[in-house]
Length: 150
Image (cartoon, rainbow, N blue to C red; front, side, top):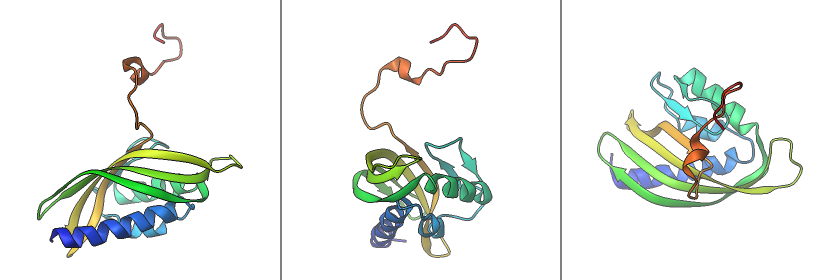
């Protein structure tokens, strides 16, 4: 596998994510590894491990978007070897999210880990969250019911 193959894959991946923000997970699912070590960490739930759970998580996540699309991808860094590659990007989108009737703009901080399977790149792990700007340290603390912590 060479970097040119990866460049073509990333174009297809970005096109698939454009469809994802319209509510269609199928193009992204086709680019994902269907193996049991595949994993997905998205803003809508806990980490999913194994293709069956990843597929369910992708379908649930895509159902949160409609009437939208990707508005841009900012690739921050890429590393490519013969056996593995990763991308760190900021994905920008507009869509109706959840029950909202108005389109909203959003951005996700994303790390995608890729590997060749049967001669083509596949996504083996994706982590996406909405943190794209600095935050206070206490923003990572989760309050527990009945706890004295904030």
